[in-house]
Length: 218
Ligand SMILES: Cc1cc2nc3c(=O)[nH]c(=O)nc-3n(C[C@H](O)[C@H](O)[C@H](O)COP(=O)(O)O)c2cc1C
Image (cartoon, rainbow, N blue to C red; front, side, top):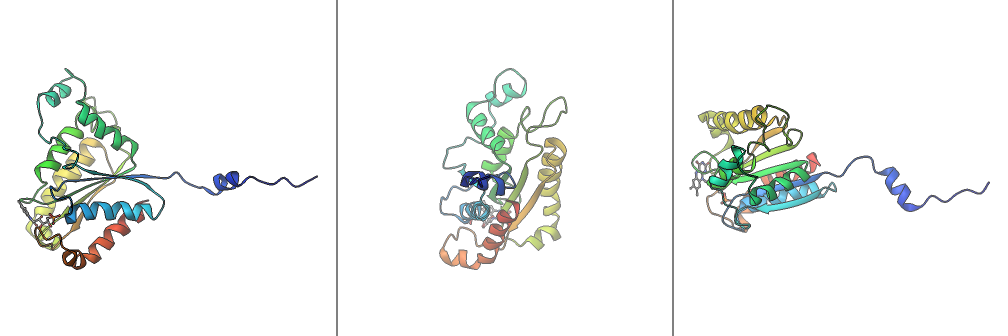
C-alpha cells in the first residue's frame, strides 16, 4: 500500500498542543511616552515571545471617560443597557485570557483614570452579578502593575501595600468578581516624570522582569 503524504497543515495542527492565549494591557498615564506605557508594552512583548496574541489600550489615548455618570447608575439599577464605551472595553476583556492594569500610583492609590475604569467597566452585571452567580471574568487572570516613586519595601513597611491589596486584589477581584488569579506587581523606585532613555536604563532590570512575567503567563 502506498504511503500517504501527510499535508503540512495537518502536521502543524497535530503539533499544536494548546490554545493561543490573548493578552490585554490597559494603561493610565496622560504621557504617551511615559514609563507606564513602556511597561504595559513590555508585558505584552514578553507574552508575544511565547506566541500570545496581544492588544494595548491606552485609556487616555482612546479618550475614556472615567467618571461614573447617570448612564452607569441606570445600568446598575437595571434601568438601561450597558453604556457603549463601557461595553466596547468589556468585549475586549471577554476576548482576553490575561489582563494587565498598568498605572502610576498617585497619593498611594490608583490614578482617577484607572479608578474610573474599575468603577465603570468592572461593574455590576459584568464584574459581578447581583444574584451572586459566577461572573464572566472569574476565570481570567489579572495583573495590577503599579509604578511607584517609593520602594516596594516601603509599601510593605507602611501598610499601604496591605491597604491596596485588601481593596483591589482581595475585595474587588477575589471576593466580588470571583477572580482567583489576581496579583499586585511593583515597578518601584522611579523618578517622577522622567521618561528619558536614562530612566529606562535605570529601570532596565524591572522592565526585563515585566517582560518575563508576560512570557511566563503566556
Ligand atoms: C500626583 C502624583 C502623586 C504621586 N503620588 C505617589 C505616591 O503616593 N506614592 C509613590 O510611590 N509615588 C507617587 N508618585 C510618583 C509616581 O507614581 C511615579 O513617579 C511613577 O513613576 C510615575 O509613572 P510615570 O513615570 O510612567 O509617569 C506620584 C506622582 C504624581 C504625579
